Amino acid sequence: MIQTLRRVFLTLLFLSVSTSNTFAAEEKEGGSPLDVMGTVADHDYFNFFSIKIPLPRLMFVEDAEGNTTFEFFSSTYSAAESDMFDEVDHALVPSNGAHIILDLSITSHLVYFWFGMGLAVWFTIAMSRRYQKGVGRDVEPKGTLQNIFEVLFVFIRDDVARGNIDDHKADKYMPYLFTMFMGIAFMNLFGLLPWAATATADLTVTATLAVMTFVITQFSGTKDYWGHIFWYPGVPTWVRAILTPVEILGVFTKPFALAIRLFANMLSGKIMIIAILGLIFIFAELFGTVGAYGISVVSVTLTVVLYALKVFVGLLQAYIFTLLSAVFIGMAAEDHHHDEEHYNAEHVA
Amino acid sequence: MGLLAAGIGAGIVALGAGIGIGMIGKGATESIARQPEASGDIRGAMILTAAFIEGVALLGAVICILLALGIGQG
Image 1: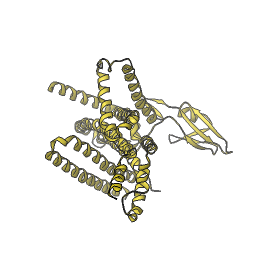
Image 2: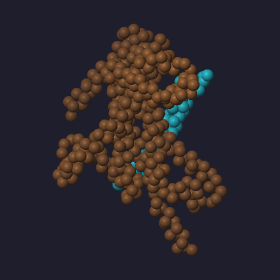
Image 3: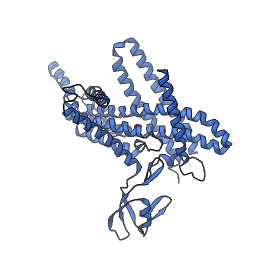
Image 4: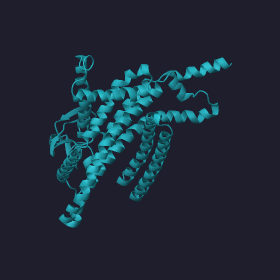
């Protein structure tokens, strides 16, 4: 046991030391030796082991006469080469007084979003093929991957879905909840690789996921749900003047909080890692090489601990997103609460 | 000025989240001590409530980041 722990610790230590070289290869601005926000921001290239692969740019451009065209370039470089665009400060500015109406370019965050969700969907479909062949139904499940899949799936189905949504409706929402859980967990864990970007550390990505939960929640709302929001039964009328606006606001703040919670957790973890490893470079500038070596002992140890914490936080945030989605869907799709009230009222009178 | 406000704000946000989640932890551990059979339900409720409080705290932290980056100025 101790031997295994020692080997794991040394491997993590070695990995974190070797990854700090990747940060050294990033561009350095004139001011500080460390560009924190530039590393977490979205890029139009795909960073693969420090090789930058440029990504295609697609956009709707409206030129000065008012014609809207759809342009496709295979990279920012080729867009700048054509006479439609000029490159100003790493951003594309269209020439001849045109405007970019809608920028649908493929960025690195989008590529990692596709990786995460694609891996989740592929994993589930590959496992389902095995279940269709009978392995896992008639025979016991074979192999580590299928057993891990079964543990995760049964956990989401029993504790998250059936624990919060009524039993006869819970299985309808299982595909959505399981894909959300696996997708977010994969995206969070992919972001821990040193050259990779965390897709969920982008507010637009988490807002997309929260909007999906919002749409599903509203479309699964029963009449009781809408009744409870607009005309809460069982309270005096003057209380409803306060309660109705609060409930209507609550419909929108709940998915908003979902998005912000996931985004801020992932972004803060990433910034902490970059800042603490970047201390090495800042100390190198201030105190020379000796200071850098001295602080690297502290920095690397702290980074190893932070990585462990971030793995836990990544999985926990995926679970919390799924759990809260299930709770909101359960609250919207609940239906036999009301019948008990009417039963008592009728029988007392 | 924005940096000062961001720093003080982040400190107050952390204070609020710490007190809130600490009170949940106190209630949860006392309840588990009183009735160990219900520890599964209590653990679920504790994690759910802590997630809500942390969401609000991180909302405040995001506003502090916006202040520190000076997005609203100029």
